[in-house]
Structure formats: structure tokens, C-alpha cells
Image (cartoon, rainbow, N blue to C red):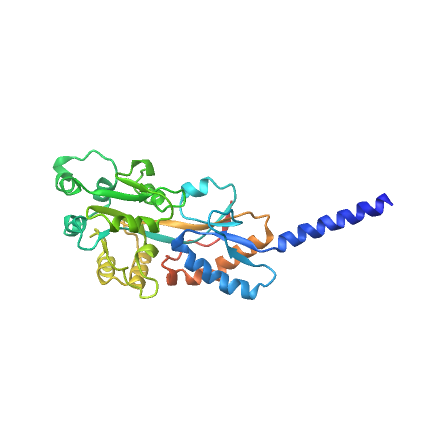
Length: 287
């Protein structure tokens, strides 16, 4: 009799595990990637009724996570699958004192570094930029999922080296903070700076004048997102920070692995639509 009970319990346990594996999975993403993720889910869930994926509730843990920096990935003991890249652009608010101070200056990577980070300026080389920078406030995100980590890494810096104020929460709050400061400078992912419907810069945003290739400069001046993305993919621009954007997941989770495989083959076609760059390297999952 005990043997029969043991078998029943074992079967019930295996059934429970199977049901849990087929249960809805969740995915967490920063705000700028959520429209893309929602597009994925709309399509994926319709064609995979037995393997549903949902956006995680705010503050909740998730089975799959969008990763925007190497620093963030380093804290996750899971597989990482790169599905694209994103660009980060420096900006001020249109018509602000900060926009006027830097509007006529062509900024290369070295000059941007001296503007955004705590670096002692060489007055002979950077004196005019140091003067313009006086009284300005740099706004940057402080969360582990902020693009600030990748922006700092681009310059060989850490996020602790930023000048100014660190903004808690999602990077969309950086835009809100700088919008209230006439002397505010910031940076953000392209998808946080452009309206994904109109494909134009969001109202009030003024990108800083960068030392870039002519086609990229023209794309920035025209303010068209699609032209900008294509021009950035055509070649390297030393003054523009870009970073991988990835999926973090447990390879032992069958449903999560299946979804990631779908993203790498089908979901990537929506990268441009939602403000991301396509990855020029072969797409594959790795530990």
C-alpha cells in the first residue's frame, strides 16, 4: 500500500513540476525597451499558447530580463543572449542656457568626457569648455539598469565619476529632471529621446553638436530616427556611445530558452521600429 502511495506522490510531484514549467513566464525591461518587448509578446504569445510570456509587474522578480550594460550582466548568474545594440546621445533642453552654451561647440569623445565626468581640465586645451561647463548640472541615472553604466564604460570611466546629480528609478526620469533645469545636461538611449510614432525627436529635446561623420551629423540635424539608425550602423562613430542589449535567462528553463531562441531569429526584425540598432555580430546565446 505504501508503495502505491509513494508512486502516486511521485507522479503528482512530476505533474506539478511540468505544470509549473508550462506556466506563464515573466520578463522585465527598462521603459525604453518595453514597447519592443510588448511587440514581441503580442506576436509570440499568439503563436505559442502553451508558453505564455508576460511583462513582470513593477518591482517583481522575472524569469527573463533585458540587460543594458556589462555591469548589469556581471551581477546576473545566467545565460546572456545579445539581440541588438542601442545608441546613447547627449542632450539639453531646447532653448535652455545649457543648449545655448554648447550649441555651437563641436564635441568629440574627449571633450564629452570632460563635460560629463569629474576630470581636472587642462586649461590650454579645454579652457573654453570648462568655462561653459561652470554652473551646469549633469543628470544621470543611478540604477543598475541605467544606460549610464554603458555611457561611463564608453569613456573608460565608472558611473561613480559622473558630475552632478544621479537620478533614481528608470532613465525616463532623467529627461524629466533635466527639463526643469535651464543649466541641465544629460544623455539617454535613443529610444528615450525620439518619439517612436512620429520618428522625430521628442518635444523640447536638443541633441548636443557632436564631432561625427557627415551622414550621421545630417541625420541628427534632420531629427529622423530611421535615418539616424541606418547611419549609425554604417560605420563606427567615435563620439557616440553604443552598447549591447541582451536577454538574461536560465537555460534550464525550457519556456524561457524557447522564447529567447524566437527573439534571436524573429524578434530582432523589430529593432529599428523601436529605436534599437541591429547587432552586426552573429546572434547566439552564451553563458
